[in-house]
Amino acid sequence: MNNKALIEILKSRKKPVITVFGDFCIDKYLYIDGALDEISLETGLTAYQVVKKKIYAGAGGTIVNNLCSLGAKVYCVGILGEDGDGYELEKCLKEVGADTSFMIHTEKRYTCAYEKPIRLEKDSEHEMNRIDIKNFSKTPMALQEKLIENIKAVAELSDGVIICDQFEEEDFAAVTSHIRKFLGNLARIYSSVVFYVDSRRYIDRFNNSILKCNEKEISKIFGIDAQVIDGDTALKYAELLYKKKHMPIYVTLGEYGSVLFDGNSHKIPPFPVKGPIDIVGAGDAFNAGAVFALTKGATYEEAAYVGSAASSIVIKQLKVTGTANLEDIIILLKNM
Image (tube, rainbow, N blue to C red; front, side, top):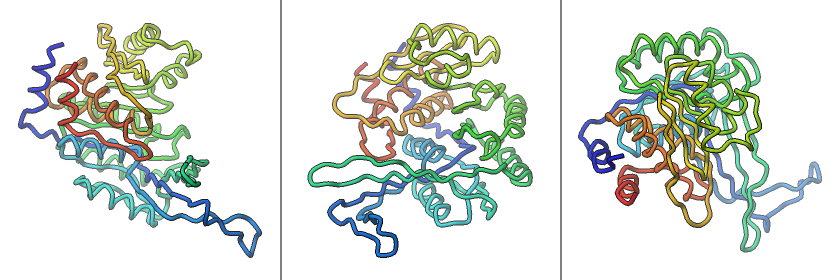
């Protein structure tokens, strides 16, 4: 790969317009001081005392954070509950410069949230059980049709569309079986737009889009043990998925880098990382970096290197939902 040519592509003046569609969450890091524990007079249970909060846009919001940091113009299309978390989430998206005018506000859904308590005790801290807020009923069809209307409106304005299918529950969030079918048709109509999908459970149900999954997700598709997935095995199954979908397949492998099958096999080595790491947001950073590069004119292989570089930067940011910027990615590419 000619990394000098790739760097020039990334530094070009073209500012890509990228839409993030799908599931948006709010990430809340709640810092609990163990020395301030109180016993509730009403229940006799320990009441934990939060002394600090850090709040970030998560899931699709993490992709947005990275895209804005890289320099893209970003539209957001998803669902916000009419609750405090919805207010906070939209505020986070606006603060990084994203356009939220196509987000849907509704009383019929909760804003999805990941609450991450972190207990502070003397000179140590550890993460406690996460508390999740999501929806456990089917997304009303009226909301689905409004989402379709909004993504259709912004697709024609976009160089790229990233679809974030975050949840394993079928039809309970923004990306439903009905919407997946529509997105496949939309990608076919707008063939010059980069359509790219990251899905926790349903990656093989999307059509006409670049597909990205990790080793666990691709192992579920083919009913194999994720422990046996290495670079060669990942390429084998990526090729099988490619033959079914006829679109490029990325598989990320954590510390072992990633692979790509686009008609040819590509192994993408990881960028070395020293010291402690936090893998939260690594996949979303890969997505943002890869699609940013593709909308700038990079090849599929070159985009994988940009995505990998973004991930390696994010995992060094501890106990935050991290972001990568273009300058740091270029430094890594120069030193390959």
